[in-house]
Length: 101
Image 1 (cartoon, rainbow, N blue to C red):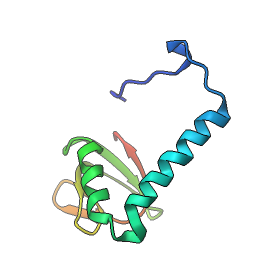
Image 2 (cartoon, rainbow, N blue to C red):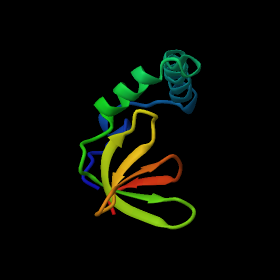
Image 3 (spheres, rainbow, N blue to C red):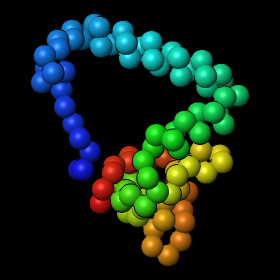
Image 4 (cartoon, helix red, strand yellow):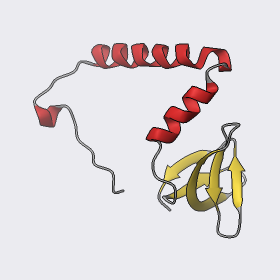
């Protein structure tokens, strides 16, 4: 896709798996604390929207009942993925999501 990628090795960095996993665990704990058993959902949603990409990007969702393509339109107030599928705006609460079509 049109997203830039890199690796630590290309930048002269070595990161043993243990260090990467420890950093990931620490970051996950921080976000779980902010989630606060759902009480922090509004904050989490705002952060997602700030980082989640631009509305209008192509997106594909495999719902288990079929494949749906459309454009990303953000998250509903309840946290559902909003996708414009051509003639309507749909909400998805589950599925395998991929950028692009």
